[in-house]
Image (cartoon, rainbow, N blue to C red; front, top):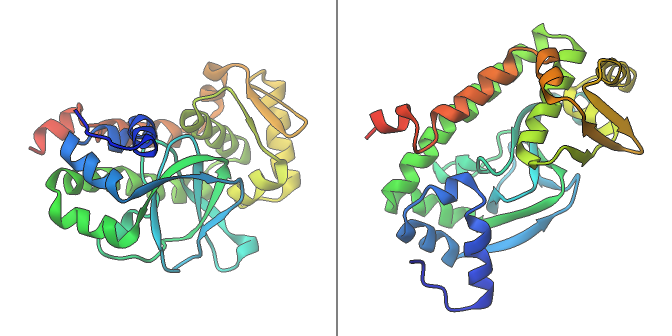
Length: 252
């Protein structure tokens, strides 16, 4: 069992099991990570990293959801990846490159376990299970980034909006979450009027309900039918790299 001496450390152990990456690690490795970690609250719209900026910490989300955006200017940025408790924010630091891939912001407030970037880099060299797990995760993350690039070019605003809502629901583990049309427009790299129309179409189809800056998934099956194929492709990529997956077994 994990040996925890202080109440704060016991809390870290409890919440660590909620993050899929941390929960998949052997006891020794997770104890090492938690020894230099802290539980932090991340407010919505908080900027974690600037594009190509340095990273002082790596975050393992518990119930927060993070977006990574890229673009030539802040106003023209578009989301290329969403990270929740299936992954880690700042994985490049674990690979020894403590530079942000894109502008990284909190799009759903919540908790995360923060590990100093230099400690995360050392973990890759010293803990083989951490190394293998992060490398498998990066496969799915890169798959998500590539698919998002194609999605933003090929699919309609309605399809992309449905995909974004589904991915947010998966990571928030809730049918209802706070969201403004302005923020969603920023995530999708679209005009607010375009997003407003897409939301209306999803509402008219009976898939969602949106009011008072709160979005509720009413019919998930209907929402999936309206989303582009990218949602299922990205989801399958993350399923393939779970510790109990066939891919994971073959990598041993």
